[in-house]
Every structure is written in structure tokens, then in C-alpha cells.
Image 1 (cartoon, rainbow over the protein chains, first blue to last red):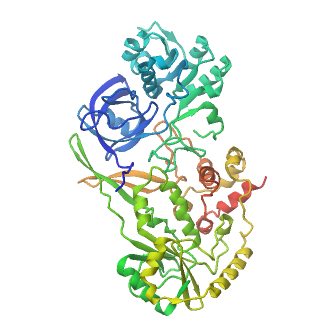
Image 2 (cartoon, rainbow over the protein chains, first blue to last red; image 1 turned 135 degrees about the horizontal axis):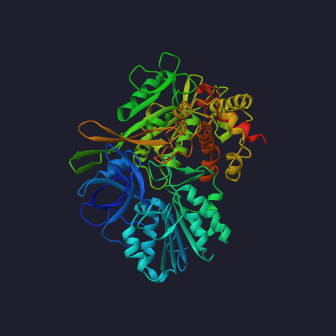
Image 3 (cartoon, one colour; image 1 turned 90 degrees about the vertical axis):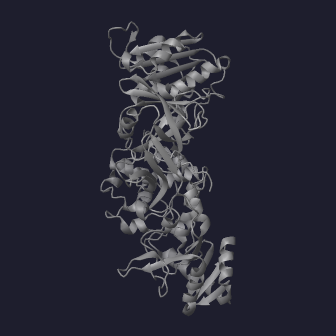
Length: 275
Length: 339
């Protein structure tokens, strides 16, 4: 019989990293080692524990990583609670990749990039950031504005400090919502911080985070002179199939699983406000 | 065109059943018709249509997708798929026949749904023309001719005979298998019937139903219409419309632990239900108005936007007959169409 996308493949968790009090990053390989499948930055995968549930997660590792895939997952429901109990060696069911991904080889090429992320919203952007770092010569400067509730809630903190902020042409701007001990960086919400930093309007913007953060950041960017067509975001809605057939992740006539999850903000204007 | 006397129709059922499973609409004794596997002595229902649509045969209400065996940290994934058995659907009406081509656009588009495809390949559809369309019928609004149904084989019952015409190659192969009991027929009786049925259709209450003003360009205008609140005010969210609908194709995927293995199954779902879009972090469609709007926007605007203008409705009238609050797609389209 022909290949069936609804039937998952086997994956195995080889490493579990505790990122924040409610976010863990899971490293997944196929049973023969290596990745379960190839993907492009911004694409997603369906992960499941049979008997518990199945859900869509963004692939946080870059496709340039040839050894494994990573998923940064926030504990917020039945399945994610279970995933957080996993230890290395646990088998999971995985299928994908799903979605369109970011236009890293077309629209992003040669551009100065501004990444804006809030909380777990860094997960899908990390794939793009590490892809861009890998093919550094193909892109202009990289600015990363990343905020979270507290220092402890910053996902991938070590990688940001040890790798991203040390790389030439990459500027990292971290912020947390409220002042705390051991933090001498910026304090304040992401949308305001973006406005304070006041970026050059030639940049292409990639934004992901809580809907309220996206809304206000977008408004701030427009005040700075950015146009909506320069801004890309990635959406999240309930999904069951991943291929535009189960009928629930649509925004108007577009299925987030298939036509998204990456949309340009001017495209969102043409879609009903139902997300 | 070939014909068979209705006195000998049992012989036809027998010949088909020799090689394939045969399903046809049968009365359940309570005035309702439903598809049943033919057994000797069964006769076809006289009802205009079955209560449930024929979509079950290609897209069953529940079906197993895959099995898992759990053992400590290990999982075994078991592909339980098998080819569907050959079957024949007899007596399908024109509206339901069209619904298959609408479901095809969903399930046979890339990536192909192998479960649906297998059943579609192994199923042969013999349609039957309508001679007494009811006042809930409005298939003609979608370019469907109930007097001349699509299908692999079309049939017409007229004056004690049943007439057959093969439409597709698959239909021609099936018709060859019972060619021996058919007689030559001229088309005049069938043509007369078509003319009479079309006259009835033109007199039905929904004969003037049209979808002018719907489609891609009207997306935001229709979505933002203030009329949705009033239209959906009494909707109970029971989902009956979605379950009797021949084109509703939304599905859920769930796991069931039998104690020996985990069965992952797919079942019909309904956009009318509160948890259809519910996520851990929230729900984009909280009110019944939003759920109600989704169903009609999908059929009348979103589906045509993605499928060259073809609507996701066939005018079978089941939702008109079954909705407990007498709300339906015809009323919605009419109300929204009025500017």
C-alpha cells in the first residue's frame, strides 16, 4: 500500500534538557540513528505517545544539524505533561514534516534579519537562527530580541549566551518582564524594547510569541516605519491530521498545518480574524 | 442503454453479490431507509433517500488507522491496513454521487489518504435517478441533475423496467458482468422521465435558491456579517447537520487502549462541538456563533475558494429535514445573500 502520512514512524529520545521550570528540550533520533526525516526551518512534526495523545510541535533544531532533531516543549496539557516525564531511551511516535516553513532560501536571502521572540515562541525561531548562522554568508546582520517572564524562563539561555551573542554580526537583546537578582540586562516587555532599540526599517522581521506580544510588537514596528509585508510570523491552532484534511486549523480558507504555519503579516490581513 | 424487468432484479442482485459485496437502501420498518448489505429476499427502499448519506462507505464513521504495542520504553508500530474488498453501492442518488467527488477533492489531494483511496478504488457506484424529489431538495443549485445522476453506472426505473447506462470504465466492467440478463432498450422512456422530473424540480420551494455573491471575493464581507449572531442564536450545537451531511469530512484522531495494544482510530468530528478547536492555551472559536459560522463559511466560501468555485454542499436537504431548530444552509445562504 502507498505511504500513509497518518501512520507515524518510530523515534527515540536520546537527551532531555531542562530549559526552564516548564520547558524541556527533547533530542529525538530514528531507531537507526540520525534524523527521522529532513525538514526546513519553521516546519513542524506530530509527536505522540500512543494512548496519551498526539500534537503538533515546531522543530527547534536547525536542518543543518545532521544528527538529531530537537523539540522545545512547554508543559501545558495532558500530552505535554506526559512528555515532560520522559527519560532518555523512551520511544515516541513521530510523523512529518508538516507546513510551509520560513522562506530561508528565497525572501530571507541577503537580508538583515530581526528576530523577535517571547517565551516558548523562541522554539520555532531557533531553527531559523541556527540555519542562518550556519549559512552566515548568505544573510546580513542578525538581531535577536528575546524576552521572557524571568531569567529562569528564557529558553536556550546557555546557547544564547555561549554561542549566539559571541558570534560576529549577531546582536542579542534580552529582556525580562520584572527586575530580579542576578540580572543586569534590560527589564520590560518585548514590544516596548523593540521600539526602544529602534531598528533600521530595511530589516526583515521574524516574530513569534504570545498573540498579545505579536500584536503590540507589530504595532510598534509599524510606528518605526516597518511594513506588514516585511514581517513573518508562525501560527498555532489545534491540529489532528497535519495535512489540511481534518478541518480544524483553518483561518478562513487557509489551513495552518499545510498553508502555514508561517504567514506574512500582510497575508493575515486578508484572512478572518479568528486565531 | 440496456434494461431489465424489475421482476428479475433479484437475479441482478444475486449476480453482483457473487463477486462483490452489494449494498442498497433498505427500509428499516420505521419509515426510514439505510444502506444494508444485500441478502436474498431484500428489496430496495422506495424512499427518496437514506437518512444517513452514503459517505460511510468511503469515509466510515470510525476506522482504525494504526496499532501500537507498548512495552516499557519501547513502542511497536503496527500498520494494520489492508486493501478494501470490492463492493457495489446500488441506488445512490445524484446528490450523494456528487458528494463523492467533493470528498475526493479532500482525501485524494496530496498527500493522498490511503484509507479513503483504497475504498474508492474498490467501490463501484450505481446511481438511481430521482422521480419524486421532495421540497427539501435543492441539488440543482449546484448544477446537479437528479434526473440524470453521475456515478459509475446510472440507472432509471420507469414503468416496471430498470434502465442502465455505464458512465465510467469501472461501471462498464461491472455492467459486463450482468450483461447476460439485460435487454436492448431505447432511450425514449428515460428521456420522458427526465423531462418530467425537471418539471417537478422547477416547482419545488427551493428552485430559486442560488449562491450569487458567495465565493472567494466575499470572504471577509461574509465572515464579518452581523447576521451570524441572529442566525446562530438558537443553534444547540448538536452536530446533527454535520453527521447527516454527505460532504462534511472533518475528523478526529484518538487513541483507545484495549489493554493489549493501543488502537489509534479516526472518527467523524463536528465543527459544532466546543472542543473541536480547543487547545491547551485557548480556543479560537469559543461561542456557538463562531462554530456555526465556520460550518457555513467552509461550505459556501472557504471550500469554493480552494476548489475552483465548487461549493461544499450538494443540496441533498438532509440538514433541512433533521435540524431540531429548523436552521439550515438554505436559510443561511438566503439571509447572507440579501444585502
